[in-house]
Image (tube, rainbow, N blue to C red):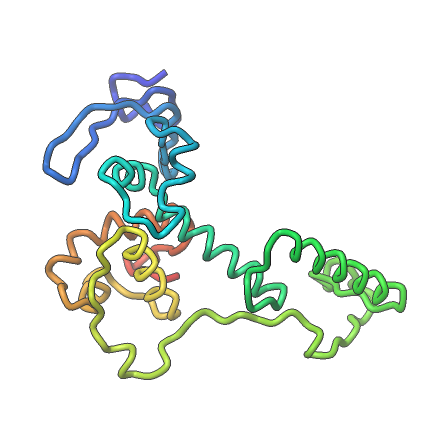
Length: 229
């Protein structure tokens, strides 16, 4: 159980917290299970059936649905799922996200292909230096090898220096920051804020947004305080 001295509450149940709301007010609540240094996401006030349907279509949300959308971080989770699906498909060399039936069909065909290759002595070791250190790895045709998907980078200096409008929604804000940090060049919070047309408005919000992305292992903070994907 949580103790009165919060310094002792590194890994506890029912930890007391103060929630700060957008209108400036605050309220007291409790986190069911708290572990220091870990990302916390709770949505126990929202029924799963309502949560799963809100934001599923293009129909404008009602006030109640908008509250569910924001409390449940529906947009954030949807964006993360879509990004994960896209990256997994890219690893298989698929340019689109197929439906469940098509995925199974492709995987069964791929399994048969790999089985035939191994019967002929061609094995695609994931880590040949450990899995098969005494044999030379089979040389595979580049066309048959899984494609390497590079991180997105700025195409030219003009694109990199162009100021961007600050997105209106939380999922868009997180996605935009993640894309900026995917360039491979570490950036400070001031440098990130300067990338937007409303620098003064953006800068105070960056610490919380960057911390959320870091908690999701989407970005990381370097020892010198800069951020990168």
